[in-house]
Length: 317
Image (cartoon, rainbow, N blue to C red; front, side, top):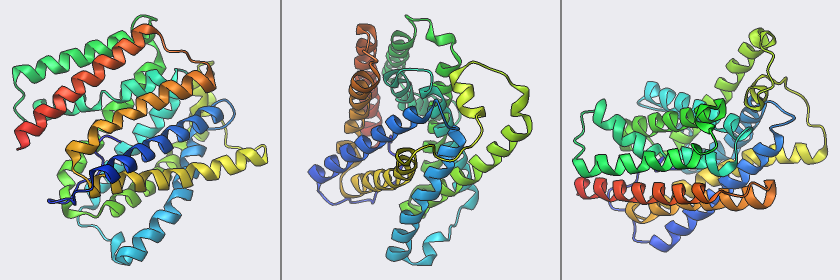
């Protein structure tokens, strides 16, 4: 989500198709969130990340080799791709852990602070110019997040901190992608991200096996991390785990295509349909009825993000 891939200098004018692919990809990612949340009480999040990565790698690798040959595995910037993969792994790990303890809409809304965080990090670390109006848009965005998570005291909860950590990691991933630019193929970037998910989950699982026994906790987010790996307990669980990987591969493909066949300025606003799916699925599947304050905060966040996006688009032109 959130502009993960570079686009050609002169993308074909197929806006309707790009919008459809974006909405479809985000719908698939929201289905993935449902499966992960369903598993959060019985399995390890590291096991799910590992399974998702292994299964998704197969079709992505097949498409990459079929379209560009084995040279699609070669990279000019291995360190940058590894850094992006590391950010991506931590992003998804903390995002899934947060989902085990918070309503879907809260976690997804916090994740969508990423455009705001990217702007702040770009200003502080990359010395990009941020005018008074954009700083005002940032302030409104953070006010929106306080409205969403503040009234119920969630700002102090570990799951809320994990959701913000996911947004920071996602911001790092996007900034690294900016440095990578058009020097790497989108499928190559995605492949190395899958490799990072597989390697990262194995390393984290080894650390949990070595030191996890020292932690006794009732926190659902930490339990999701520290739980031992186990075989699927039913045929449904087995097929759902496989579906995680297949779903991820198809969702990534949809987003790649969306930004490949249509201009960023047209496609990007439709990423906010992800919040709509989170509200609907959380409400009807998990009975997580959104509070009026949450809906108001989501509206403010979307408005401020649109404002920031338009400002950056004007500056880039």
